[in-house]
Image (tube, rainbow, N blue to C red; front, side):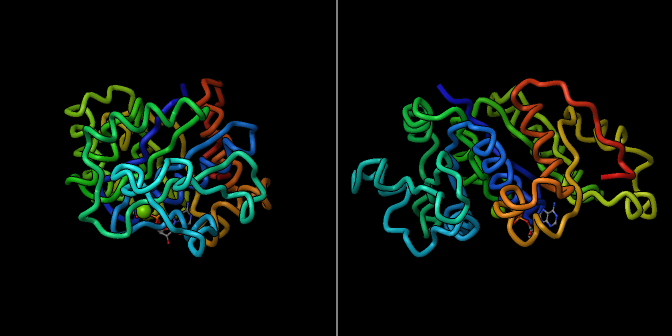
Length: 251
Ligand SMILES: Nc1ncnc2c1ncn2[C@@H]1O[C@H](COP(=O)(O)OP(=O)(O)O)[C@@H](O)[C@H]1O
Ligand SMILES: [Mg+2]
């Protein structure tokens, strides 16, 4: 059974989809079989980020409604990424087709048997889409940029995840720029952020043009870029390896 990780954040634009795609590609590159599930019904983006937008016929709601077998709605991402073992189950095009949490709890464990990792990209906010995306998760990553509003919202998401019974939670600080962090003076250090949110840190990802342009291409074609290397450290820690924190001023 593959591990099911949901990628959450309080605020939109914190980097959930970027981290989902970047982490999925990194794990696949490391030889793992990975299924990405786009949980953002109505505002899906992983299909575009993985180059399968034009191919889409079916999505997760078609599987649930019996319109197709699961395999028909699971798309290989090989052509765009060059990775044989990375797959995408797209979100419905309309928000009204958000899959009910109880159905997610039935469907995801069946799918996870065929993968080492299932990664679910959560929509922004803490509404119906959130409940659906987190329902079947074994663990959660909370993605937060290092600014006060996003950090405060991350604290709320931490509480919501607790309420949903997800005890294994880790924090990913995204779009980190050392000089800006010092200049902003909102937080003295990374420990103050961790203390405010109340979740253990697992990775700090830099603001990186490669990740912004295409996280998939950055991972595959620019493995020495700061973004791809930070994702590699995140993937290793998720697999249980102990990787020391990279010096912040060299991220
Ligand atoms: N580490 C990063 N470096 C540079 N740009 C990033 C990074 N993470 C996210 N972005 C950019 O920030 C914006 C929002 O990211 P996205 O992943 O779509 O957020 P979310 O899914 O949480 O709404 C996008 O334009 C994306 O390219
Ligand atoms: Mg998104």
